[in-house]
Length: 466
Ligand code: ARG
Image (tube, rainbow, N blue to C red; front, side, top):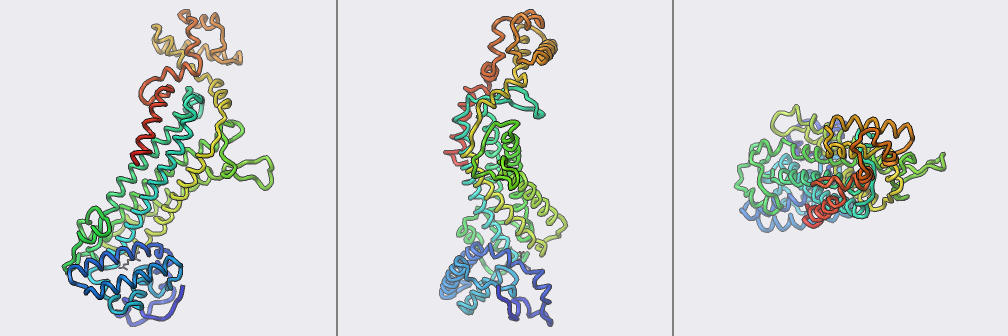
């Protein structure tokens, strides 16, 4: 970063140069230089349109194209002379362009303002980020589906209140997350439509008096439509807030899965083992294998939610139209995009490297009287009112507990002391397999249903691309 005493592009109005502290305080170039590629993209489209409508000459346009190509290379190769004297990415690039191509560079800003320019840049940046997330999310869903495919018949305790409730297929459990991530993908797709609207043409706030063609710029940049109101176009950041809300929900979903992985990896559960590459040891306790990655994902979800809150509060007090407050949208937004991208990438890799301890899952499912509901349902099907059946089973469970065994270990004669209508076929429903097989309805955990849910998930999330 270089700094010199060159006057600012807007300094004509002032008699005293801006204080050094103010310069540092108000500058955004240190972080918004990340928008350079999108700024160049937007400028190229704007210049082309200006040329097409006759506001710029062919010569000026071609000089601008050449200059921006040089700048693009400089940015890519980390050679661009960023300077705090030009407060943001827009002024830095414009100044450099003028150095490179002279007056043509000074004409580029005709019919636009940094207000509609920055709004365009962020939208282009966010659109690209969303497209990346879609690919990353799809990879994560595929990793979960692959893992699930090997475990349709692996039975585990399903929990409510973190107490053993009813047995479920491990694949069914994983598919719950595939669904959540599917909705996250839909939310991002939906958000993308509102991101993908062109602000350029709004200029500072009121539109421009030049006969520009906004539709043409939208077409060149791949925007689906135009922001319809110039004041709205330059001032609202709801699209970024919406993105952060979708990102927060996504992180919350991954935080829940992380919490489960952390519990499941504890020796008390010993349900799964995630690859060594995703764990760390302790510098003092040699036996430790810490699930750092899931713990950090859980932690980083807080950070992303924080950014959502930050942006909401940033917006809430702003009168129309553009206010400098909006410059503060960038760091939270960039950090959200990066945190989410890194999380999705690492999560897909981690879920492709999970070993499942089928025996431990089965044992846990057997230990918690997870088929008690099945016994109650058995009695109901034989005519006992549900509330009475519930009572009968509660007594049977108490008895089994005092004997230190499972319901299925109780002899028939003992079970019959609780209800005389119990017959030898009761053992079919008391097994884990019998229990899950009976939940044979759409969305249920019966292996036959889980298998078809898996097929459907593959089709929906893998092939359809959404
Ligand atoms: N750096 C500014 C931002 O991020 C660009 C727009 C500045 N506009 C202005 N009128 N000062 O919002």
